[in-house]
Length: 214
Image (cartoon, rainbow, N blue to C red):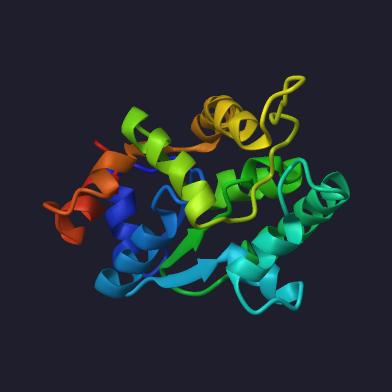
C-alpha cells in the first residue's frame, strides 16, 4: 500500500496505520515489532505464534523441531503442510480491523497464495528489513544456534559426498538472494538490518526512517 509521508502520519494519528514487516527469520522483525508496539502503542500480530499455536506447540523451538532440516525424512511433506498453515495464519492475521498495528510476518510469507499477498500489498504498508552482507554471516550462525522453522522452497542442494551442514551453509546465501528479490517486489519501503539493529539509534529515530521520504 503506497503511502505519502503525510498519509502515513495521518493514518497513525487516527489509528488506521497498519505496517507489515517482511524479511528473513532472525533479521530483526520481531525485535523491531516489539519495540514499535511498546513505544508507539501498536497492536503486535505475530504470524509465527499463530502457526505454532494452531499446531498445538508450546514454543517456536517445538515448531522448529517438528519441521526439521531439509535433509530430514518427511521434510518435504512437513514443509508443504507448514506453508499451508502459514497461508491460513497470515490470512487470519490480515483480517485484523483494529487500531494501529504491526504485522510480524514469517520469513516465508512470500510463498503464500496470490490472494494473501495481494491483500497484504493492498491493505498494509510493507517494509522489507533487508539483510546486509554482515547480517548474512550472522544469520547463518544463528540458524544453527537458535533454529527457526525454515522453508527452503527447493534452494537446499547437497553435492555428492558433501557434509549436510556444509551444504546448508552453502545453500543459505542463495536462498537469501532469491528471497530478497521477492521481499523487494512486495515491499513499499526497504530498510537495512544494520539500521534496525543499530543500538545508537532510538526507536523514535528508527520510526522516522520507516516513514515514506515524501
